[in-house]
Image (cartoon, rainbow, N blue to C red):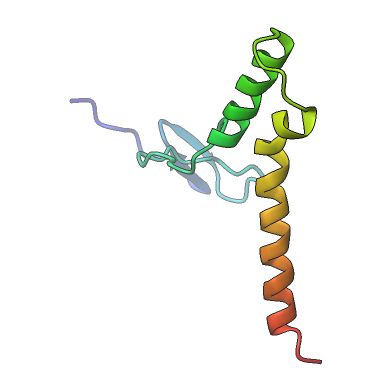
Length: 92
């Protein structure tokens, strides 16, 4: 086991390096926790891509309104919910 050297006066240890205490640079610490915030393509986006591929491949003969419905229906519902909440809490 190797013993870490003590940093000079006015320096602090960050990982294996000694840096000035008043350094303007900030160092990221490595987090051991996993980020589970659902980034990436969602269900509705994947469904829209599937519908677009099927339409362009002449497998389905739907209107473009229904092909793009997995995109505009959730956005429309979200806007309706936001509007309802806004109306409920807008007590001017």
